[in-house]
Image (tube, rainbow, N blue to C red):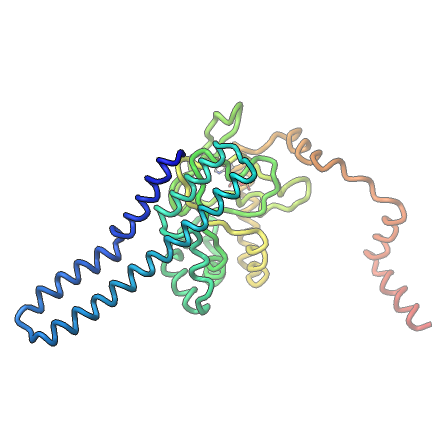
Amino acid sequence: MGRKAETHCRAAIESDILTSPCLCNLLFIFRLLYTSLQGQPIIMKTAVISVSFLEMRDVIGAATAAQTYFRASMDGCVAYMNTYTIPKLVQNRVRTWYNYTWASQGMLDESELLDKMPLVMRIAIAVDINLATFQKIQLFQGCDQQMLVDMLLRLKSIIYLPGDYVVMKGDIGKEMYIIKSGAVQVVGGPDNSIVFVTLKAGCVFGEISLLQSAKDGGNRRTANVRAYGFANLFVLEKKDLFDILVHYPESQKVLAKKGRQLIKSKAAAGAPAKEEKQKGLALFGQKPPTPKLLKAFGNLRKAGLLDKLKKGAEET
Ligand SMILES: Nc1ncnc2c1ncn2[C@@H]1O[C@@H]2COP(=O)(O)O[C@H]2[C@H]1O
C-alpha cells in the first residue's frame, strides 16, 4: 500500500467516527428531542439540549480515543517493519490486517476491553454473545453447560486474511478454533489444490490433534487449514481446555470419546499416510532407547519398590 492509499485509509477511519452507528443514533435522538420539545418552556429546552450535547461530547471522545490507540499501534508496527526492512508483501498484509480488523470490529483486541471487568459481568456478556453458538456445536453436545461458560471466558478472537494458513499438517496442535464469521478450507494434495471441505461460521476445527494422545504423533495436525476469505476465529488454547476439563471429568469422557470418533471419520480425508506420520515424528529424530539402568529404575517405581526402599532407609 503506497502513501496515497494510506492517506485514503486514514481518511476512511476518520470518516468512520462521523458515520459510527453510535453518533448517528445520537444525532437522530437529538433531532427527535428538539422536535418533541416544541412548545415547552425555554428553560426546559435549554436543560435537555445541554445534557444531549454533553452525551455527544462523550461519544465522540470515546471514538477518538479508540481511533488514536489504533493509529498508534499501526504506526508503531509500520515503523518496526521498516526498521527491519520486512518485505513489502508482508508489510501490505499486515496493513490489510490492521485495516480489516478496525473496520470489522472497531478495536484491535476485544479481550482487552473485557479484561478489567468483574467476572460476573464478563460471564453475562460472554453468555449473551456466544453461548447459543457453543450449544449448537456438535463436539460439545453432552458436555456440562458450566464447562461451556468456562470455555467462553478463555476464548480469544483473531482475524485471518484470505489464503492464510491457520494450521499446517504435521505441526503439533496447541489450540483449537471455532469459526465466528467467514470460512476456512481443509486442503491437501499437490500445492494444496484439493479442498476436502469448507467449514463455515459455528464449525470447529483443529480439535483432533488436541483430543488425541501425544503417543505415536497423535497430537499432530492431520490436515492443512486455510482461511477462505477473511475469517474471524475464536481460539481456545489446549492448556486452557485441559485446565477446564480437570473440573469436569464427565465432559472429559464425552470429549475423549468424540475425539476417537473424529479421528476415524473426519481425519480420513486429511490424515497423513502411515509413512508420512513417521516422517513427522522423524522431525524430532528417533527417540533414543532407554538405558538399561533407567529401565530398571522404572521397573522399581512401577512395583512400588522405590517407596519401600525409601521407607527402609528412613527406618534405619
Ligand atoms: N475431512 C475433514 N472434515 C472436516 N474437518 C477436517 C477433516 N480433516 C481434517 N479436518 C480438520 O482439520 C484439522 C487439522 O488439524 P487437527 O488435526 O488438529 O484437526 C483437524 C480437523 O479439525
